[in-house]
Length: 157
Image (cartoon, rainbow, N blue to C red; front, top):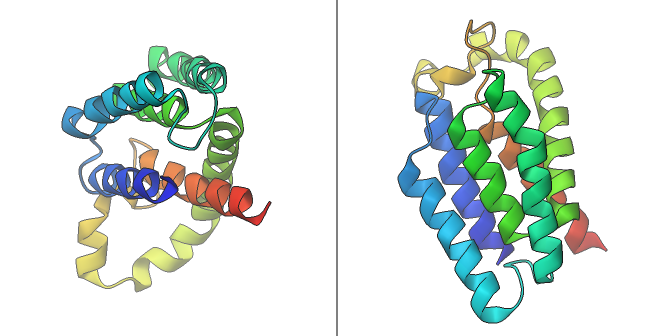
């Protein structure tokens, strides 16, 4: 199931990197599927208990709603984090958020050096990741990095 989460998050990341927008067609069905799977199987997509999944959902909202209310995160970011929380557990969510933060720091340092050397077609495909953008950076590409780090950490245990 981790592969399904990664594939979904990759689609969200690509759409966010291209358009600074994640469609409700990606976020809302993910929330419904995660909730349905939890309800009918008694565990999250990562095998966590309902209590762990609901705790992760609560944490996702706790971390994302203040950013949304202050205009620092979009509604799609809140829905994406919520779906990830509901589909996984607290540790997956926390590691994903921490990994996203590390990826954002790395990008802030590397992007000004690397961006000019990327092929123009690549820069056009992920134009929202351009360093120095006045709107800031889209969150989903970095969340994908964090999720990958979380999955690798969980697999190595």
